[in-house]
Image (cartoon, rainbow over all chains, first blue to last red; front, side, top):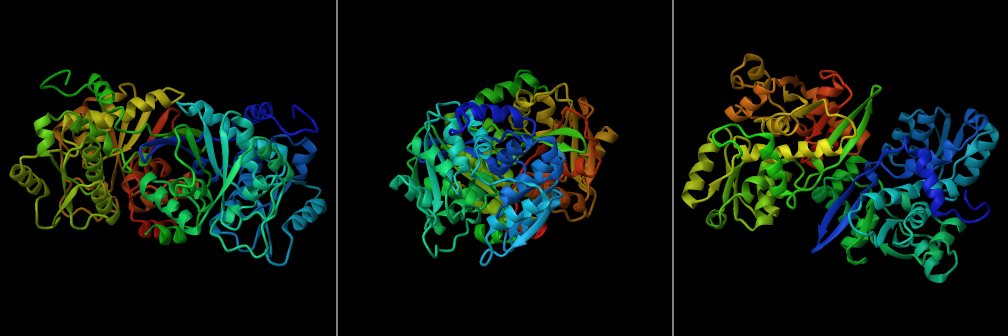
Length: 316
Length: 316
């Protein structure tokens, strides 16, 4: 990091990009005409593995020492981070163990296994995934790769923002992005210092929005409502992602299940894109009019790993 | 056309591009690592309307006189050309009637109507669609917009090739494309004079392949097998598309239903892309090893309008 002990910076995102240039794809930035405005869609759902998660994982794994590479890595994830770590590990020749909830969507489990990773399940209701993963990592002498609370994960995700700046033919004034733990949102904030950052979370899971409004970290409340956005079910943001977004005066909005569903249907019917619910959250906020479609607005389409049968039910 | 009475040329494709620059999207060219080779995928399935057809339709409609625009246009199509004409007509403020087979896939019918076009059905078994459309055009004083047998349709489709030349970081040595009537294949041949052109058709519907091999136009045989590639069920290629492809010594291959299905599944699982069977035919030929994956090979992913329920059955 360019400033040890401090928050990662724009320079760290540039260094991350150089580090992972051959490990990730440049994803398309597609135009969308909406209500007389031209928006831009950053299609991270077309990234290898179906989400932006390959970026952070590649950046973290590329920094491992030779000894660490031999011992391998452990990650816990509901799915997209799992696939990101599994693919990055495969590309770099590193053994990977992924701790997944037993009820993770089947395509995410299959996608993780197909990359050669070992999958270990935990029970979302009775076990602590962080504790499970930490115990496993210690037991095997492996490095734990967090899904968002890590400067290299954050700067890796931020590389999508550097691509946006190169791809967008007009000044990027605002980036609307879904938010789980805030790794992508924080990375984009670092990558695009001139852009306003708006985070989008499912209703009842909008702890980043409430934390940013309150000026201090607030967890998701007790008994949050069920949400289809499995990728955004994060009970607590990290001090690191929160500090970065707070410093940039980011703001958050929440979207309903119906708004998410409308966005998944819109992406399929109008954009020919398969999005998973969490990956459509930012688009949902724009379609619902919760974020006005200014010129220079970029909407992050962050993931596409939805169970095909459920997806078909949603869009028919 | 730059050479009246003759075949359209590369210059005509450049003129088409200038004409339709604001009417179509630049589609992504994505890399694909396959068996140690780097291929390029031109994602026309992400074009507005879900296929490349908007290109040719926009080019033809942009050339109509004021009087012709008022009278409107008629097109016949199993679906993608229908949507292309409907969207181009809507963008240019021209009334459109689309003649579709009564058994056209529901999303294609819905997509055409959603663009404000009038849909008129015909019975694929008992009625001649060309005669139906011609009669309708005469009756209403409207201009008939053919789906491939027209120099402006061909050069419009070819604009995808000019984009490929700009987007591809290496010399384009070969383009693999699906082929119905040959409009796209011929357009690409004009746009990319240095590239080898390979057409891909469903087994039993490979009349372009057989025509190119024989040196003269040969129709699809009697009782062709059923195919999921509804977009490629063209009984006869046109003298125009055939002459262009013959002059370039294009070659054709045929793919089986299983190979097409494998490609649709691959696109969904590995590329996060929804492809319709016809839109996956070129990819199918490459995955099946019927076209060797040389460096500098571009594979056209031409359409994505597949019934969601059927698509879900295929990919699960």
